[in-house]
Length: 128
Image (cartoon, rainbow, N blue to C red; front, top):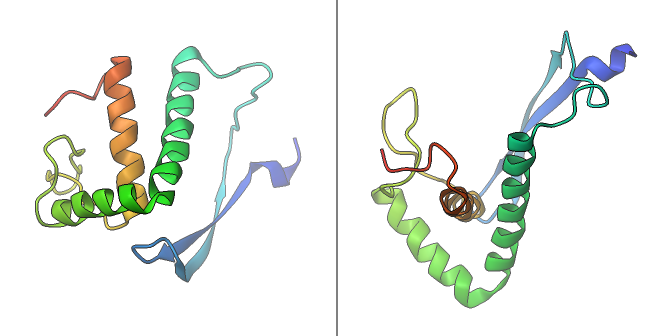
C-alpha cells in the first residue's frame, strides 16, 4: 500500500441556504492506519442497502428542487422547521434536541432518506 492511499485530505465548504459556496475552511489531513481492503472485505448487505438509500435520496432531492413548484413547498416546510423541528428529526447527541437543518437541500435529502429508511423497515427510524 502506498502512503498516499492512507491519507485523507478534507476542507470544509461553507454554503448559503441555496447551496452556493460562500467560503472554505482550513485543510485537514487524516491518516488512516488500517484502511479497508474492499477486495478481501467487500461491503456487507446492510452497508450496500444504506449506501443505496443515501444515493437514491440525493437523486430524488435534486429532482424535487429542480421543479419550482415543489421547491416552494419544500421551502415552506424547511422554514417551518427552523422555528420548530419536525417530530421525526434526529436527536443531536450534544444537546439532546431535535436537529434543525440550516440548508434547504440537506433538509430535503434528509426527509427523503428518513422516509425511505422507514419504508424499508430499517432500525432507528421510529419516533423517539
